[in-house]
Image (cartoon, rainbow, N blue to C red; front, side, top):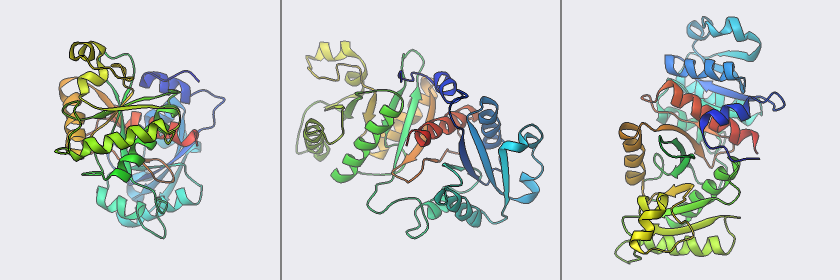
Length: 305
């Protein structure tokens, strides 16, 4: 498989008629952006849908006239019940991906994280990964965690790196270059995260993450720009060609996410990882295009299991 370097290539790869379509359960598809993303995925041809929501909304959708054979409706009035029903569909194998519509994130996560009937296997770590298509960059940039874990422990960082390595390979990157991000390249007990990075590097060298290059601490510019490393005299196997960035905490990751979106025109896709099936958890402010790309990312992950 050639590496998928942008979202258009992802759509093309998923839409190949030889590939089976992924089935997505959407919780409360009551807003225009979610429905437009569903219509986009139906048009691209890479997903079928189970829409779980209010009867007066889902029974009157215009998309049913063109795609009735690829859309199933499950009528549920209450949002919490809709979340439980949709999670149940995934657990039963009747859907491969879960997607959030017009429902509060906390309500959806209660169903996802339910110990008896949810989607997070015991011992797994719930994380969030983003794929960003940034103008001027010739490949997608992956990063984590911008949405779930405030201040990761070492064990959580191990899970984050492992998830990121798997996600990169899903996109055809055989040996992902994963940069451990900090404000400088120095290891210091003043910044405990840098000592965690030493342990992560050692685990990578021992093969804990499969075929992957893991190095840091380093700043973002050094991770993605070889010239910056040369000027600083930094020698790293990342060599300014990072495929993925691991941020020290949610504050850094979230600020980066919002900054590249607002000031660089980045198109972002995101999903939860660590769950037994991919979960698309978009923000209410995400564009239709962003939600469609997130859907495609989750469908790729689901079809690669």
